[in-house]
Length: 202
Ligand SMILES: Cc1cc2nc3c(=O)[nH]c(=O)nc-3n(C[C@H](O)[C@H](O)[C@H](O)COP(=O)(O)O)c2cc1C
Image (cartoon, rainbow, N blue to C red):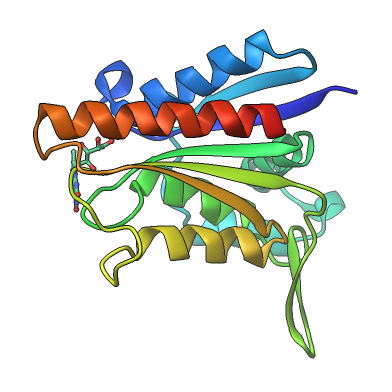
């Protein structure tokens, strides 16, 4: 059986960025492994606008009653949700920007976390509707924050994934990338080794 991985990158540094290098390492290892297919989505090359009222409103209109513009606007979120559903593993390569996620990635989550589609509100609270998926976060940072209160990024990502039902999440950190060459090289080596192990487990 084939396992399908959706690899999402969001670094404004493109190929000079470390998160994209780690995403490429994941893909290279996946190619060597039978039965693991990769789809790439680059949220910087293919940028989404901020979510606005017209697009949000288009989701509230039943599909058969949408205007041409509403169909186009709702289609953006529909396509991204369909792409997510079509894969087994979500790989998020995420640089730390100003202690948060890149706005390009937030724009993707704003389309994918959609009430009535990927989660629903119940009397017991929200219930995720995206079942049977795993996620891997490749987190690159200039400094070191993992496990400290300043790492608001990883809990935020896990909360958003958890809302739609993705609760099996592995995080690979490459931290201290701006803390000298020795530190950077060791962190990236360790991250690549962790990715190797994860690819074998998929
Ligand atoms: C706009 C911007 C904001 C950043 N903010 C932080 C930050 O708050 N904390 C940190 O440790 N590193 C920060 N960095 C450094 C990046 O996290 C680091 O360069 C990391 O490698 C980025 O991933 P990338 O190489 O894939 O782009 C920032 C970098 C940029 C470009």
